[in-house]
Amino acid sequence: MRMSIATVSLSGSLVEKLHACAAAGFDGVEIFEPDLIASDHSPEEISHLARRLGLSLDLYQPLRDLEGVDEATFTDNLRRAAATFATAQRLGIDTVLVCSNVATATVDSDEVSADQLRRIGDVAAGYGIRIAFEALAWGRFVDDYRRAWRIVQLADHPNVGVCLDSFHVLSRGHDPSAIEDIDGRKIFYLQLADAPALTMDVLSWSRHHRLFPGEGAFDLSAFVRHTLAAGYTGPLSLEVFNDTFRQTDPGHTAVHALRSLLWLADHVAHARSTNGLAHARSTNGLAHARSTNRPAHGLTEAKPPTGFDFVEIKAEDTSEVEVMLGQLGFTPRGRHRSKPVSLWSAGQARVVLNEQQARDQVPHVAAVGLQVPDAGATTSRAAELMAPVAYRRTYATEQPLGAAVAPDGTAFFWTSSGTAEPAWAAEFDGGIDQVTTPIRAIDHINLSQPWQTAEDAVLFLKSVFGLSADAPAEVPGPSGLVRSQVMRNADSSVRLPLNVAPHILDGADLPQHVAFACTDVVALARAAAAGGLPFLRVPDNYYDYLSGRFGLDDAVVAELRELNLLYDRAATGSFVHFYTRTVGTVFFEFVQRIDGYDGYGTDNAPVRLAAQRGGVGTVLT
Image (tube, rainbow, N blue to C red):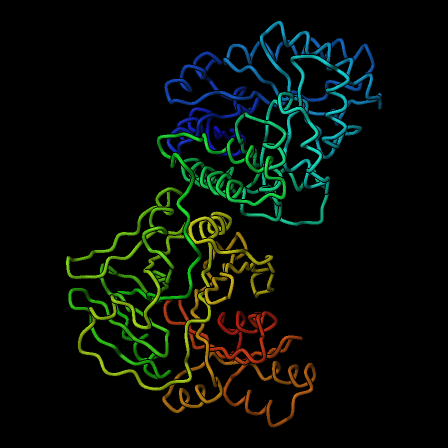
């Protein structure tokens, strides 16, 4: 099945968008009418450019507010439609999208709408054009794809069919299963968009908050399966209105977009259906996808990671981090035999400190290591999803690692799981034996995200590594709300919270942090304090609030206050944790989950954010 994208989904000029789509590996595009109108190239020139780039032009859109009107208005609408069909013909496009009437509809009648679509179909046929009628979620009278299909049936014209758009169906909560009742030959076009679960008017939701498949809350896999089961054989096409994507580099966004379609097609192909025939028809439709940049037979199956392997902190000088790790009970395991890199460990938690090619860089989270069931399969899948390869200088005697770069620039490495100590750890010499510590493993790694890559990061982690996304949450901070979304594997041994700062800050005040799971966080805090660790200071007001909120014993509150520990409790258990001060742009957190607690102490985040900003310990004047 071919893959297409609407030019409205990308930034730049029409020519720039076509080049970006071709470079990413799309088969075709939908031409958004305003993009053509604003272009200084003729329809013929655009058509020739598309052919030269290997792109088909699949749809011209949108033709608005035609049906459901009085006869005098409709006469003028026919003239307008004919002009649009002439333009589409010059582009070499044979399908035009006709939206259900929003602005000028005055006649709420299926028979009238059908008659007018039939007459529009007659005009379209004269230009060799088909019209795909789409029920807009905010259409004045026609806002349901099932009604649009009834009207198309009544029109009974070979050049009149329907366009199905996942946003218009799913945003209204309509059941997509009835798509299978539509004659697949009359589904002229399929448009796909995901979206977050929001409570707002559908027009604003549609115009500003659509996402690429895999980034939102819609079940697009089921939607596509129903459409393919009906017999649809046209392209899978993306139509995503989103303020972020219209401001970012079109080349990057096009790759991001195609990755989402590859993930969706793969998800559909592997989905199990209760109807064996419908499943066979749907997967057969997807099996014929072809592109020079895409795998011919679907993506390589790669199972999700089984745990963290390591976290890498990179800086020109990592000595300050070394001191902190020593105060926390980490063991220095040695220096790498060929690189200015050291390894520190505690329990199953491994921290790599990297000073290679780090001139003028302050300490920051540069890479995350994962353990996966089959490193080779994950490497193949990452390549098929066009994930950029992370550079790592490796010599013949050193362990090769799978490597990719996430949209925010963080490198991800992976090795096959199965051993307590990874093979690459043997490349470090001169260390000492690991000492006993309450630290057990890496609990989660919190990666701050620039606003323009947040959705891309969700898709990257979901598609390449098979992580699932929790529902987003918003945390109040000193500079505005911080949006957080956790990516995790099934048993939560890998947790990657993605935090997005308010746009105006561009992530500048959101340091990244690594959280370590402990068996006794109070004992660890006492030992670290005795070793001189400077904790992030928690204000006294927090402990007064804590005592009242949870009814804790005075002695418990006093101990928490003494050690700058924070506390949370939920129905599933309780949570005790503390933070170090920030070094460069990274800090550490140590957590103890008690009786199945599964959260992150979210209510404590504003306290932490304010303390990191410097609001604790200042002098009133």
